[in-house]
Image 1 (cartoon, rainbow, N blue to C red):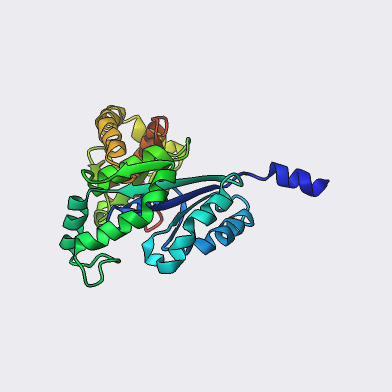
Image 2: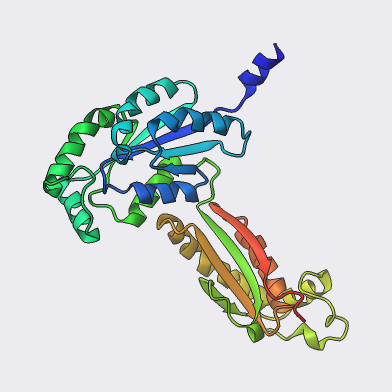
Length: 296
């Protein structure tokens, strides 16, 4: 009885089967799903779908969403994909995504990477594409979602994947607010850099010198300086349309760096304040790091 209750209360898993035409964007979709927190397995034999689902069930909450990319690279094993999918439907939240594109678009993509079609053999690219279409036609009809990627670039396709498969509470963009000291160099991975050296340095205030921007006396001092809060207000207003645009363009990670001389007082206090202000904006997951704190 206890066992049946535990089974009934077990969370349902999400399984997404990604298939479709070779060259239609499976790798791009796989990368986009990984960015959304899915556990992605590429070129999985269909016979391994059920063991993969069972494994995810035994991980508790660790792997709640699994995506398996299955396609004709599996050779004869690919023939069993319909049977395996039918056996899984109803046991979990199981869906199938089919990626398609026009023959012209697929030919253009294969020629750009100078690779043959998997089913081309001694024939032409179009021969391979035609053979694949015949083999996957029934799968296309059974799919829950078909995406034609003919006119999509990789960023547009990734954005479309996010619209369909992001969790309801998934942030659009993850933002890292990073404090640093100019004397140690500007962070090479910063998307935006702001200079806090326009503010007087607490280093020259004896009682504040041994403290850091994490300490309330320093934070209150820095944020109380003329221009400090005006800067934060203006910077948040300037960043708001930028971060909204990142969401639309599927740029899922951004680093905003604030620097002062040593990365100990002004930039730390201002970074903490900026983090607090950005955290209330919708669609963002904001964290703060202090690269050079403790180096002096």
